[in-house]
Amino acid sequence: MAIPENKLAFEGGWQYSPAPESIDHINLKTKYDLYIGGEFVAPESGRYFDTVNPATEECIAKVADANEADVDKAVKAARKAYNGAWSKMKAAERGKYIFRIARIMQERAREFAAIESLDGGKPIRESRDIDIPLAAAHFFYYAGWADKLEYAFPGRKVKPLGVAGQVIPWNFPLLMASWKIAPALACGNTVVLKPAETTPLTAMKLAEAIADAGLPPGVVNIVTGAGQTGAAIVTHPGVQKVAFTGSTKVGRIIQKALAGTNKKYTLELGGKAANIVFADAAIDQAVEGIVNGIFFNQGHVCCAGSRLLVQESVADEVVQKLKDRMDTLIVGDPLDKNTDIGAINSPMQLEKIESYLEIGQQEGGVMHQSSCALPDKGYWCRPTIFTGVSQSNRVVQEEIFGPVLAIQTFRTLDEAVSKANNTPYGLSGGIWTDKGAKIFKMTQKIRAGVIWANTFNKFDPTSPFGGYKESGFGREGGLHGLDAYLNLEA
Ligand code: NAP
Ligand code: MG
Image (cartoon, rainbow, N blue to C red; front, side, top):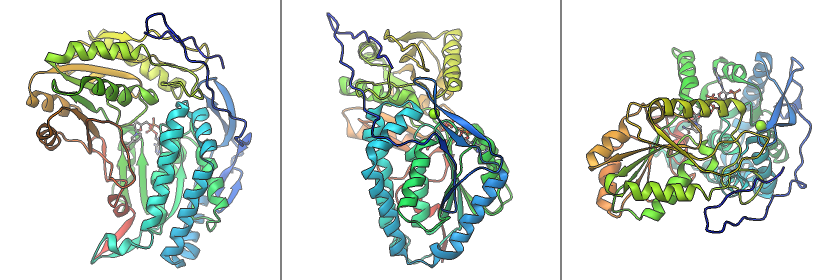
């Protein structure tokens, strides 16, 4: 794919030479079946759908479309494995399998990273340095817990739940799969997982890794398909626990479907996080944090800093520095190591983002975009900011899930808090200030599951993650993430 000529904001202008990650080393099939009971099996319907590279619009592979009968087969395979080998195995042995998956993932990290960028459109720098290492870290971390669960919950009897049904989105495909599978296995459950329709490939590579790790058949089953496949997992009577990450809209449908059942469930949903910059902050550092929080990974991040609240006295300076920095960002080939902003994941998502660009302007917001060139083919969006917006504007209230930042100002700490809290969401937030006391005050007042101070979007498998309000409930990660996969008895 041709690398666009990116206009850089330096006097005289200069460009980076292309630095594409090689894809010679990756091994992809042209067609992927379902991974059920330790085998790759064709879907009952015989139907397959295309998974597309959003940077080239070309089909990468055909992927099986699982229907209710396939899901039923997968749940039965998971139940059989749960009743059989998996629950009879010593916890320390279970841990060894999970460690093995982690090590295979590390060995194949380059391949996983390249496929993640090909299938999903995220820059290789992100998939190589963040997604894949963090995914492996989750397996390592939870492997360690497998034989120590009684110490995690002293005085309580711990019991696995049974079969966990897991449905994940397209923005962190392998990371979300790992985030779900690792704790489920460590707690002794078996799994049926569905990746998102537009990003199924690393989940299928994970299925290969799991097969190579020698896990007993049926402990992990991976079925691909669209929303209906997800619904079939969620509503299957043989599933004891549902773990969902995705939009608040689908989260609501799932919650309704589960009402009145005794299934345990966690919902990790949308967000509209604010980065709050006080006048005493290190401004250059804050600008870098804002850019990292909303533009990298195309804003396809649930906890993205999609709002900026900046103290009035430094607002002009921050916005100008942000504009300068935006002009240096490279939008283009996700496989190029220089790329900052890759492809938008799908034409549907691009359409959604573009509709918000219209809405934002119609509501009276002032839109500014960087001036970089875009490739001819594929789905792209320039980094975009809106100024002159108010709290009731839709671009301030609603999750856009693209590289679009809504900027507002504030005068006092209380005003910042009330604006930050004034959306239906509460997933994350960021505070930029020189004063520790201000950080503590703010973190107590902001209703969000994760708050970063003088940094943004930092993750670790040991810390819990989850939302307030319409961002969902239940926690994943850390010790809290175990709780969601266990029955705790007195
Ligand atoms: P989505 O449309 O809700 O889809 C999520 C998953 O659910 C996909 O696998 C989807 O299948 C499936 N699905 C769709 N309809 C379903 C139904 N009726 N029953 C069961 N499953 C169904 O979300 P998305 O657009 O893929 O992802 C973006 C959203 O995820 C954003 O709102 C983002 O904030 C959120 N997110 C949250 C977190 C968090 O931890 N809080 C993390 C990442 C992302 P298809 O792919 O076929 O549609
Ligand atoms: Mg794709």
